[in-house]
Image 1: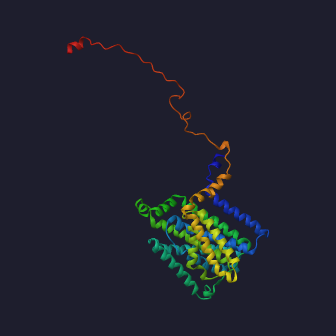
Image 2: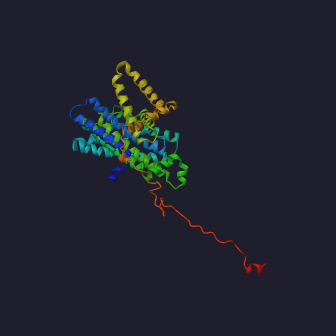
Image 3: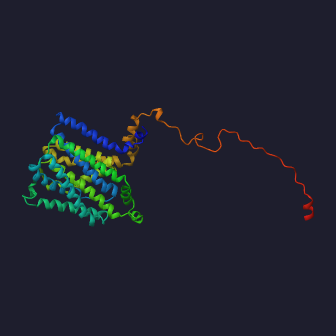
Length: 377
């Protein structure tokens, strides 16, 4: 029982939340309680969470600005989608999906290493420009490819996985992404990564291999972006390079920033809310009102930023955050309240604290000089 109580449940709260969310909607899907549009939105939410969490490793924990995350997603989508289109008639859906995920993630990770070796020696705006250029180069290459290879400007046709199970697989992969990310950040390597973010010069002075850790984070982040791209290829019937522009990279960055720099749980919540708003606005604002979608989307983001950062709302945020709301519903029973182990009657001492100490004092006789003292004088 003591080992059960010693578990830090706050470290596993996001696992439990994502797993419960997946189970509930999986049951609803299997019994026919979800519409096709809802299933499609769940797929987009899972992809957005994976992209936001993986980018949070670079931006939030490493402290580097990357604007080419959509480029790594594009590589995974095209390579994984092409693998799926070729192998599915031969192997079937499930084996092809597994192979496509490995291919898309591995190729994106390789591109992450290739770009990371020269780019991660840069800092700040220079790194952002290089990663942004990488994303645009990748997108342009696929857009100008031949129709026989990657579809060219018309896009690459890809197989569609069973809609009742794809979002379940996607959320299982989200759990894997969370496990890898959180275990890395909470390890000794994660402390080295955050020290680079806090002060790179001090990190180098203490013997941390800055380039190695930057490359590791960039590679792992690119790997999960590639997996998200493969899921995107299975969620859509056609992959078009225009969907992976720098605007999409900025949208992923907005999810990370709104969720809080270095907050995995915040990235999950922000990715879910932004994707939900995006899908709902596309559904509501149709026809001539479609031009207002970006306007409402921008206004909502501005309000969220003001709420998270306005000094005048600091007291309201602290009083009504999730932690305080949880503590209100949390019950504290008397048996869970432990006495102070450092109380005076619990501290072992050589003398009991309740003993009465006494000292016998003897008064000596007055000093009288003897004969020897007189002779010395």
